[in-house]
Image (cartoon, rainbow, N blue to C red):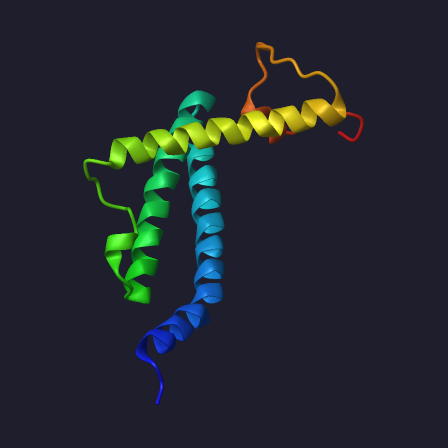
Length: 137
């Protein structure tokens, strides 16, 4: 006779790898598609990146909801609803993200030497994707 909690746990483990792969594929598809569309339709780099961030985030939340419906698991543990503790969870996430960035910078600085952050006019995030004239042009 099988134990119901053990059977439920086995079902969860069977769905785990495919659901993670499905989320990663969906994540890449959403972020690439939104990136391509915003780069074509919006002229300002700042607005492109802002729109990309908001639209991609909304798309990823929708993807998470879709996968939760497919999984048919308990939605109370998903933390995708607003509640009185949402601001504190958000604040903790921001602090963890800042700490993670700080650790990353510290590791790079330790192994690669000092790091300095400078504003360079005319150079933005999209500069890496634009092909400029060079030796092969």
